[in-house]
Length: 105
Image 1 (cartoon, rainbow, N blue to C red):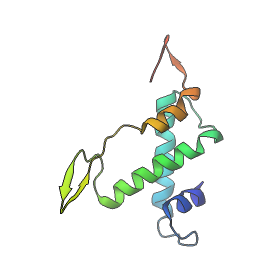
Image 2: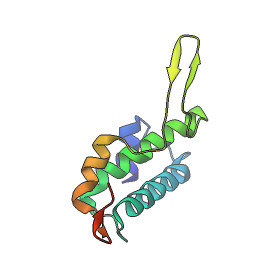
Image 3: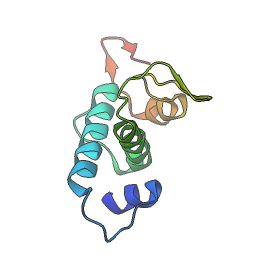
Image 4: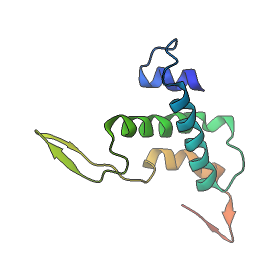
């Protein structure tokens, strides 16, 4: 999965300088999915979601703006939320476990 994340981010596959950070971001993305879906392991079918979440967090890390909600600088604007993107949420729906009798969406 590390190489897939590097490709998605446009990083050189042979450059290992950021590998520890990328592994951490992959692990954190998997933890996010486990928490959202109430599962203990992330199925291989959700690797795309893991990569997308990890890439989003990597880009936030690069900008030093974790959780930024709004910023405008020199005509450029940035707005982040801590929530998952809607398309990622849709990817997770088939894997969500039921908490009590309600889906957690």
